[in-house]
Image (cartoon, rainbow, N blue to C red; front, top):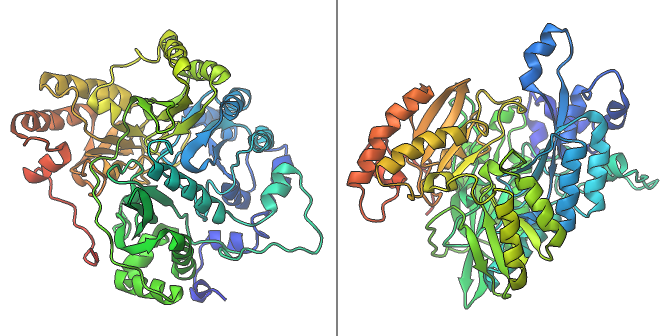
Length: 566
């Protein structure tokens, strides 16, 4: 029996999982219910494991209430792709599905996944079936399991990148749930009589909360490795992966007014050779399964398990379960956590074009038809498409002869001239927020572009137009766009009001600090104008904005946990 069953007052989610028959619940019946656009409340929880969140159109909320109509329920569906790579055929299929069943756009996420928005209940099964037909999946993109595994999406950048990419896929497949419920509900597979489901790692109530793994390759921390429950930092020796530094306890979500919740970066606890890393990962997950908080979901991530019991306890438990000890961490250095845009030639002599996609939204506007451009490229492209951890897109494995064609398609669709890519804009990220996310207090994706327009004027006036500053915005403190790692970070408090955080490092190894609360746009401009001006005049050579505001004591450096081992 798992140790978590000794806990009293299990959360509602734990009871739902316990009686779900390995994530089946009554989803089949809920999908057939014609009286509502929603699922049964228990199934709303369970469908997350299958890759979907039930939401509603918040832009129509007031009008529908006045008409005494239920909310316009709709669903977000997330597509899993380890390392974020798809073929042109897969891209075209996803793009078509977004038109047939969604809101006509694709969202590229901060975890290298695709999201459809605006799918009605009747479209769920066709969408998930089609996703699987093109050899992708939505399984375990949500829920209390290991999520999509992140890594640098260009294996042709170097032999090291190739090795890490392949390993990320191996890890992703290894930790998929083993339940057959997904195939029965969505793909019409029959359960084989006399073969009960069994989850050797997750057991029948799965994990206390979601679990995230990411692999980083120094010197670029382009997937924000310290924001994950388990981070793996590749250590190179003689142009091959010797192993990985093991980082545990990252997670950025918090709740306003609840001081027991907080963003936390992972601690580096040791080194493991590559051949033992999956064993380490499985053991870390098993400790979280057995000791994670199953009473209060706000306190249920691995970071809370570690802080409640102590990092030394965690490492001791890990070593005891392994039967061997991690080695001392190896030296590494990160210099940035952003993407490098434009054309890059790979070690396979093919070309890779990193395209800025503002906040990951692939859409068509009057003079900016990005979605159309990418469909046209997919029709002629012989390579692939790769999602970065910063919501951008790499058009990969392009033949030399096809570069001009791709450039022409992007130009003709207004993609390359849509916005001036300043240093601030190229390093911006935003979550979906309003009007689909039920957790959002304020706008994010739909607002940050216009705010960057205004901040860019201040940057230009101070000669900083090309200065790379990480700026991130979320509509709530759940931190889906990793706003706690923004050198300038905004967290929505109410419509038009944001908390302003400053001082994260440019390479993703230091959180930012709350500077001012409940700011309007006018307040934001007023507060940032003198700070940006001072940065232009007083920064040291090569000093990042985040380091500058710490050095000048505009904010204090966020305290690291007291129990860091390295």
